[in-house]
Image 1 (cartoon, one colour):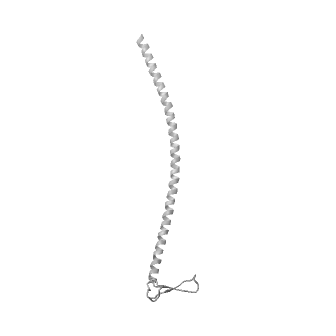
Image 2 (tube, helix red, strand yellow):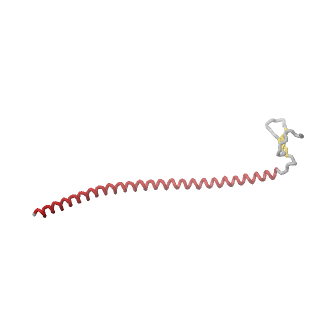
Image 3 (cartoon, helix red, strand yellow):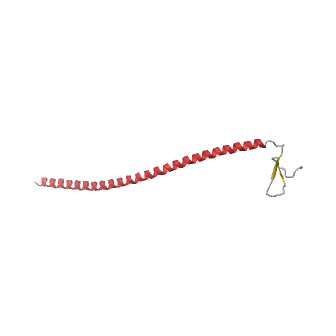
Length: 121
């Protein structure tokens, strides 16, 4: 083994005086590193485009959700107003219904009264 610090990618670390620095040497036997870097660059570019598409889609979805919330608020207000009108109509119909029952009862009583007067003669 020529260099104990040699990696499988063709890079080797050299010890230096300052322990905060690491120097790397590229092994000429593995010259396909440029191709790998280009491939990684293409993948990063593709991921960037995907992230931008996700961001655009998220904005569109947020706009749709905001529109739906506003629509639901309007619909809720409309239903509330409709229920108020319906309750007023039902209350009014009840009073009309009671009035109709009273008139019907009076009409029946009058008919029975007149009929009884007519047959007593």
